[in-house]
Image 1 (spheres, helix red, strand yellow):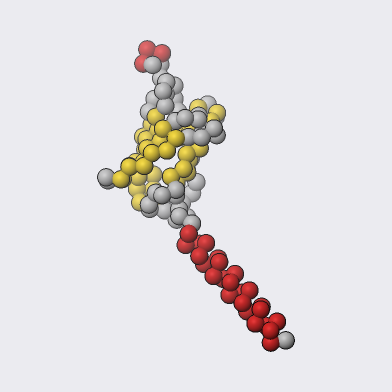
Image 2: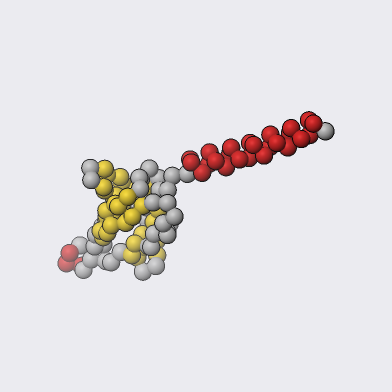
Length: 113
């Protein structure tokens, strides 16, 4: 009986420790999607800058980019892709922030391509 009680306490203690560690390990990060007319844009270059810090990512097949090592605060995000007008905006990265809206590219006029 005492051994069973000890095992129960040990399981509960391990579960609490695991949940605590996993909550600290999860960095907020920043993730978004680049699209054109609702379609994913793979291969777009996305740059995040804050003061002297600069992070660069490239969108995957679904147009998704991720900055997993980004720190909390205000960042300037720039999206660039051949044949499309560059985009630039500021975002706030931090805990409990809503998901980023999609970055919707606009095609350049033929004379500017």
